[in-house]
Length: 321
Image 1: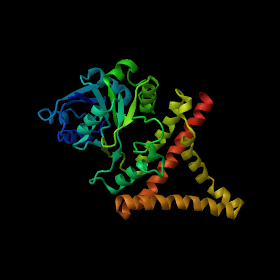
Image 2: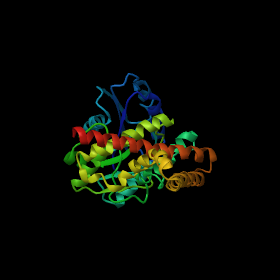
Image 3: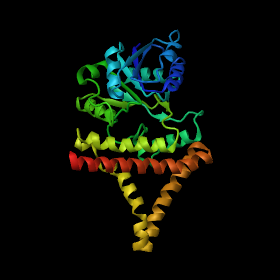
């Protein structure tokens, strides 16, 4: 039986760690420890972690604020497991998670892995709509944890596992924010380690709870892709430009209206078809018209915000390097 170390960085979100730790108490496979790394929070969660001292092998650490990447490194240094698993604090873990990982690693030799994310039944309609847009094949979210991902799988830090050997050879995160998990995954792959998606090792990822928060997060993701390109230029691929083209196209709609009515009608039809496809897909998936309507907004925000962030950081890179 492998021993796993769960690393959870947290910053000013005590309510999230309560729900996450509660979900970990229900695991069918229990050979793991939990390390909660408080990253300089003003709203500490130590009292919540202590609630689970008799239910989990859990340790709490407080450190100065340095960002999630370096906080995970702090946890790696303290961990005792054969494998280290990183969760975001806004995740809920289904009871079969560790058994699914254990079964997969027994059959496959893999040094780094990740799993998909899903919407829990208890999520609000907005959370379900955001989950849809982040996992749908009709938005860029389809490449994040999808069973049929494109190319080599790059684990993401909301649900990521690495072997101790990976940490000993590659080290931890080199950057602490803005694409830190992408850079880490790329370095792991370039070092010759094999990665894999474990479809049954999914988590319920709450993500953001409002459109403004979601916009801010996706804007940051767009910037992060360009930031990772500073380390690995080849990792900014053609399909990463799609949200930027979506954004530029949408902004240019009034211009086409003034230039040519037929071109304008065609352009508006393309965006209308995009929204209709996402509405229909979300309705089929969630069986809820409220979530489907919200999915139109979240799909738009996802692509538009990512595109704005991508173009903003690209401009900054061209100007200052």
